[in-house]
Image (cartoon, rainbow, N blue to C red):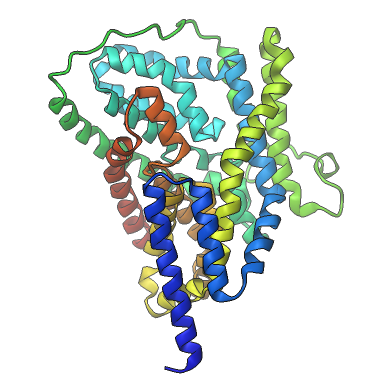
Length: 453
């Protein structure tokens, strides 16, 4: 082994040690951003390119591809909560479940999944449905850990991937701008539904079966009286407001093309690459205006709520993407991406399983599906093209794996929120959803390898 090979092996050893230390510290409760940034700097120093990590930090921190869609979506979610439109949508979806208690577990998961499609934010989805479904399930005798796990699985299993405004879809589009079918609308309408619905079906069934065992074990606990879940009267107009940006994005892009938003309304002539990200922001802002018009009595505070939500999105989501990108840049500079490419080239059959489960593992550690997709998709795009695979289809698998990893992460914001809403331990909730999610991902990968989905 020559000196260059020894140096490369030493860098990989430092990288492996940094990753192991990062996982350990995150599990012990250290802040994910601090841990991953420190690991990125250590790995960057080992590979001799700390400057690349710093450049990535600054570039991602100011990248509107993340800031505009994520912050505007969170702003819209805050406005929905302020006006109560999200609650009316939940009440509309939950109403049939009040008469079929035995369907509460799958019903609540499906409600969370459906609400997450227009709302996009998993945490906001949990906040939205929690006050309605927690008392409903508690009155039916379900234990709090099962209720919290239902909330978590429904709010985070992947509903947002069916919304063209999801940042993961924009990541795949940006990496494949010349691909004829890479637009977020086409991904949400054609590429992702078979994967997302397979994952949803398998994980829901496995979770439902497991929940019966959990509830038998907790049968000695007396059901608590249900607190007030709020008014049952549903304003259908307000319930439809959360769907406005979703409808607008589908109608304005492929494959529907019902109408086209003029480019000069969104970007100047020399900034066409930013059209899709800014179109998402425009759709969310239009949704804010519709929400304010639907609830005039609360319109005065809508702008302030929008910017508060945007600030939350930057603090808790964009910041994590910034740090995850730094970590991704560091491990790429350390040669891990090249090593992964060589492994895939020598064993092409590993391509799809790795594309699903490597992002899953990273998301489980970092707590962010968006950060995992953004930082790791590039590791699989080149090998996919080299093998003649559709890179957009591989991107869909990466996005779904990242969503599963986020859902089973005890440090994810949605997990912490579901634990707070039900007074349970986030590690308990993460453990309860892990087996159903892993089962779903295994089925998805097997079907994808077989060419079924």
